[in-house]
Each structure stands twice: as C-alpha cells, then as structure tokens.
Amino acid sequence: MTSLQVAVANFNSPYITAYPWTTAVGFGAKYSDPGTLPGGNGYGISFNSTAIAQASNPSPIIQAYPFTSGGFGSKYSNPGTLPAGYGHGCAFGASDIAVAHATSPYVTAYPWSSGFGVKYSDPATLTGYTCYGVAFNTADIAVACKGTSPRVVAWPWNPGFGSKYSDPGTIPAGIGWSVAFGLGSIAVGSGSSPLIQAYPWTHGSGFGSKYSNPGTLPTGIGYGVAFGASDVASMNTGGSSRINAWPFSAGFGSKYSDPVTTPSGSGYAVAFGASDIAGGTSGSPFIYAWPWTPGVGFGSIYSNPGTLPAGKARGIAFGSIGGSVTAFNDPIWFGMTT
Image (cartoon, rainbow, N blue to C red; front, side, top):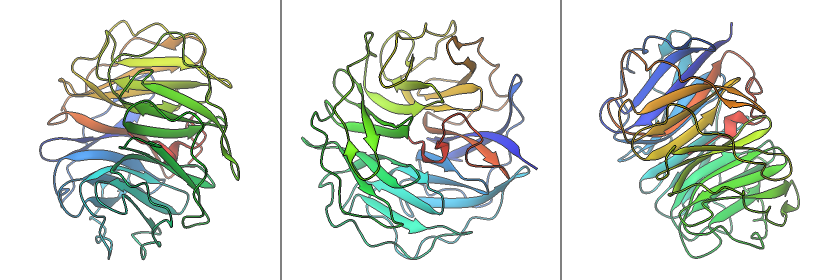
C-alpha cells in the first residue's frame, strides 16, 4: 500500500524529521525519531519508494534508513567509502544514490539496493569546487557548486559517471546552491541575480541556450529549486514571500501570486508533492506547506505540524513509500534536491 510523507533535514537533534502526509489535510503526527540519529545537522534529504536518506555533517556525511508507513527502520550500514567533507545535498536515482559534498571529488555516488553498494568511480572531470546540490533524471546527473565557473556540472549516468557535458553557454550567476531536472529542462538556484536560471536539457547533448530570466525575479540566495508537472519554484533568503513560483513550459511564465501566509526566516528548501508545495526555512515553524494547483498557484496554508522540527530546515522532500517514483507531479521527483 502506498503511503505519503513529507520530511526535512534540519539543524539540531534529531536532525531528520518526518510526518505522514495527506493531501487536503496536511501533516500527520510526527513519526518517531530513528533509533540511530544522523551524525549532525541535516542539509539535504531524499526519498525513494522504500527508503529515506539525509546528507549532514560531520561523519558519516550520508545516512539512510528503510522507511515504511510506520516510519523509520534501523539505519543502513554506512557506505564502505564515505564522502569527503561536509555533506550538502543528496538524491536517489532509479537504483543509485548520490551525495554533494565539500571536499574532492565533491560528488560521490553508490549503487543502491536495500543499502549502499561499492562506490562508483569518481567522475573523470571533477567540478573543482564544493558542491551543494545534486539531482538525477533517468539518464543524467547534475550538481550545483561553488566557484567562478561553471557552477553547474552534469554527466550522463550509465549507471556511473560518463564524460562530462559541455558547460552551459551562460553560466549561473553566483554560487550554484541548488539544481533540479524536469520538463525537458534543468534549473539552478544561485547566489546572485537572477537567482534562478533554467536551460533546455537533452540527454546526450546537455545544456541548451539559457531561457530568458523570469519577468519577476526572486530576492536573496536561491538555496532551493524544484519542478512540478508544469511549474518551477525557488526558495530564497530574501523578499516578502521567500517562496516563489512560476508556470514553466519551455521557459518562465508570469510569477504566481505569493501565498497569503508567507514563511518567516530565510528560505532554504522547496519541494512539490502530488498537489501540494512545501518549503523549509530558518524561522519557526521551519516547515510550511500549501495546496498547489497548476495555473492557480498557492492555496490556504496547511496548519503547522503538532511537533515542529528542532531547527532550521535545510532540505525538504515529499515521499511516496510503497508507490512509484512517478507518483508526484515532478516527473523525476526522486531527483529533487536542495
């Protein structure tokens, strides 16, 4: 039986917080904390159909747990070769898991089948800089990273890293903080205006020419980006709403109206569910969610969960445990990241 969840990677123990999720109702009672907690503050989180993973610091940098409608199972054994440096983002692929982290090789990936397999060989061409976000689609992998250029790096996925795609003709402005695939496109949240940029994407060819910037730009660092079925959203540190969304069809449409109830604190993470959208911030209650209707936008905010996360939410994800990875209106939701 399929069950729905929403979870955050957060600062302060227990570092990972998850809730049952019901569309039109919202948050259920918080799941019990896992028996073995992550090693420290959580930065990235991802579901597949049977498990949940979190990137954190310090060691082991990446941790994963079986997940059922009853919540967390016993933590999987750590991978034999750990990622190097702080963990910033993680993502499940169809049969793999990847981590964006602070020290060379900056992105590390493993086969996944009820636990971590033997680490894949590092990509032949490294990013050269700390990576913050990572995303899969069905045949590619991409990271958002620090540095002067290219700030977004992508490879075919075989499984395993293929030969790096050529850099985009127009590189993201400022540090690349987040990346997402969807809708025949790839989007990057970054540290300088326009703060969100998107490109056509074709497997085997890579980046197309950057789409025009949205007519109404977000404000503040773009720590989170996510695609829905026909929309794209970003979570930003500044502005009146922190959360921004646009219709998306071969480029940005006119920005949706801000939600009536807007988040507090800096925005860090965003995710689409089947017919909902959620954001993570630095201000209590740290996690916010709204009904989402394409073409209409935000509905009335859901009530806060009864038990709040213990600190700022740096990563957020919807899950469909026991269901298909195409259950949500991001056609590659298993590749969503923050």
